[in-house]
Length: 193
Image 1 (cartoon, rainbow, N blue to C red):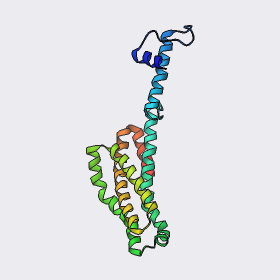
Image 2 (image 1 turned 180 degrees about the vertical axis):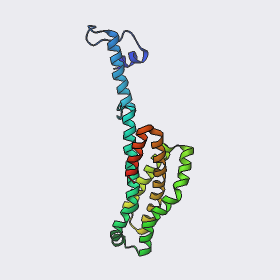
Image 3 (image 1 turned 120 degrees about the vertical axis):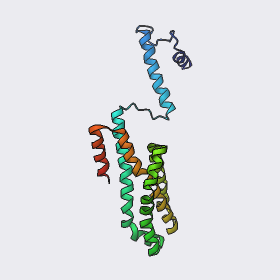
Image 4 (image 1 turned 135 degrees about the vertical axis):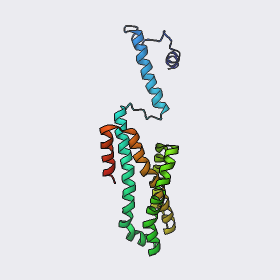
């Protein structure tokens, strides 16, 4: 393996040919370079090296964005269904129950414009990913909350994560797609709301 790596790195023309030299040595060298380049990239990327066409990457990105938007929309309304169980399990009063329902929407609406502007300055993809991380972590916190106060705090923070996801999702779609594909992408995005 050391000889192979040395030959590949240095481009050594005396690269050993495993079939005894019956095939074209230059072609064999190119094949080995491609295989080892793939393996090196595979190891460098933690085992996640897949060669995907740019078109496929765009549509996979659309799926990820649409799922993120669907999560924040569902989270707006899902608490209304679970409020009776939350009141019973956590022993909260009606004021706390109201805050659990509304805190998410208040922060979400209040931060939309600000986060959109920050995304223009910093980059939509960076803010979108940060929003998904914040939303996911605070969803876990909300699910594990032992009392109403912590659940209300988690819902406030979820609203901040959601405000990071929604405006950046449109910006990402606008940047990724053009022409007819942009209209299709916006249609998929709109169907998740």
